[in-house]
Length: 443
Image 1: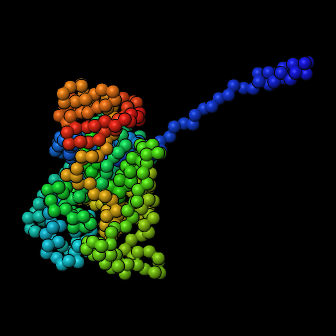
Image 2: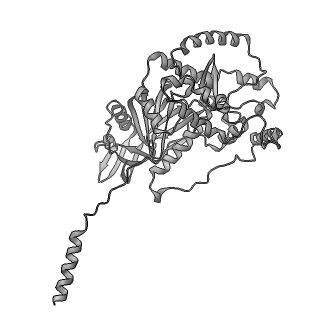
């Protein structure tokens, strides 16, 4: 009996001498971060309500499974110059179609499918006069841009470094315009008039084509929008990261293993021409240097991208000379617009690479059907209807008529509550409205 008491006393003594147990959670870090500037346009407020807004610059922030759009806070002159720069770089003025009609069939893949005309092509006299006038206007307004725009300080090319973004946001990020969950996101390349001849799936409705390249079309929550990016490099990386964010938004049990398309189909006439063009380009391969003769190693793309990121936010004394300090390959990764060099990774890919990559990105048309699609709506409680003859809201069964939902969205966009914890609910899109599913999550 005494031995038992002694043993219990020793056990109690050991327990009292132990320090209190502390289980500190690790510091939260974002699994996905991506930032940049883009031109934004809303095409549909809801699946049943179209809205033709104008393209305007916005700050795009990808925060794991959340897409945030902020106002680009700059004076009116800078805003106009940014829009004109995007137009100059990516807009279709119709000249490419005239060239394609006048030249031989080889033109289809001899030039850059993404807007760069042949070097020996000739423009009509009116186009030359118009370009001369535009040049004088542009040179005048380009002086309104920050002096270090050549170093990507406006994030024309996207970055993943939060420190660079924080510096940019302190100056240019305005109020939050909208925040979306990426669950059930639909994203694809928006077919453009510049790319219509290079896509596998031909479109016969020219009215459905946008007039600028490097554009993604998103159906996120209940909205359809366009995000127009500065370069092909930016569009491809935004597409990739948006798809990753969509996967992060879904629970592990609900994630689908998809067959990712890595090469174009080989039975289309366009891709037969593409394969022939690949063979022609292979003739430029230099076996002695083990690289393509017309450019440096493809691996330099990421090095150049990080170089811009590092050079973008130096001190005032180093900004002016930061481009000069970059490697020669990085100096080439800039576009010259009327004497002003601006960071641009458009030419980091050959035309053949662009066509292969583009044909591996799905196309999302403006007229593709919503009916039967599954959408996730954040802050769904703001859209809950009354139980009346047009709507149902009882015992977790919800049906929102399209007319009621259109009105609710307009009111919500005017007074959108920016809740930190947002409840989300899944719905099916029906021709008459939204039908709820028995799932409610927080993001």
